[in-house]
Image (cartoon, rainbow, N blue to C red; front, side):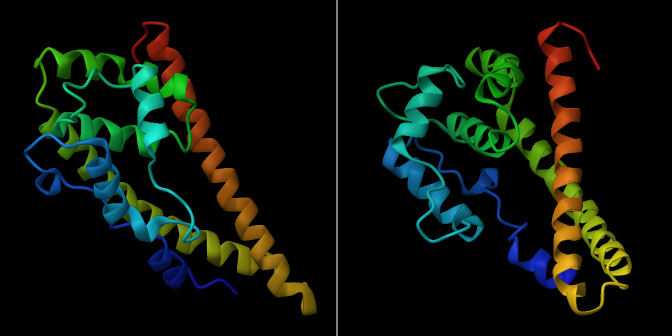
Length: 191
């Protein structure tokens, strides 16, 4: 049987890059990669996985997912935007991420928004979501256990498959909801 608390602890939900851990000096690309590797190392599925690479960052820059860097150095704002991109790209297409961040990028480039304040709000929502997620995973584990109770010798395998299918379903629902909002943003409509 899956143990909800053990599963949740392995997810390293507390791993984030808070504003105060982002250096106040501009960073070269290798320093940005090191910051992400340090901040998110526990989130790797395998030790060989890369959190961020030069190619990824260069592709984000070419794709204009964040406003241009100066003298090959990344500001705190760039690091915050790259963190947002990193989180969003696992569920949304790069084009969708670009649409979502276009207005924020423009405002940040023009210094019309305090990106630190925005990013802190984003991290606060993440912490709120983490608590909801923990409760939901516990409920999903309980439900999968209840549904697999009558499967005898196959119970453990059935339980895991039901739990995986349930978690994937929830992920798909959230992704589809996010895509619907992206489409509304792209169409100029407000949700």
